[in-house]
Length: 166
Image (cartoon, rainbow, N blue to C red):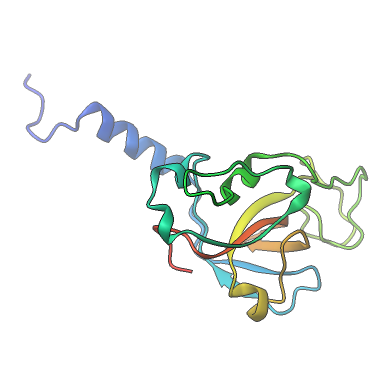
């Protein structure tokens, strides 16, 4: 038998498999720990070398989480805020079997035992969300997705990041 004419290339087929493995998240909300106000956000993954491969004149950083350690300098002389996403320094972990305040990772009911290890999700956010969402760099926040809630560590805020609308 002959293969069908519309056979996918290996890279295209691998890409389709990768896309099917990613969870579909229709809505995501970020808020301070008190859950108010909530701001709807869109999540994107960013590679550590992203800013090194972009036009850095359009990168305008505004705040950094100093607990993440030193941020390397880009060729433009600006600090690479994306590097904070790849640092484990300054993260908080709760070593309890119960989440009485319902704010740690993967908890869904008051006082229910957690099944997974508690871990903060590191994020870079647009500076405008600081005013609208009452959020700040280094201050814990909540990321709410369908049926899941995660603690967030805001590592960096920027007025402009190439390729993203802030």
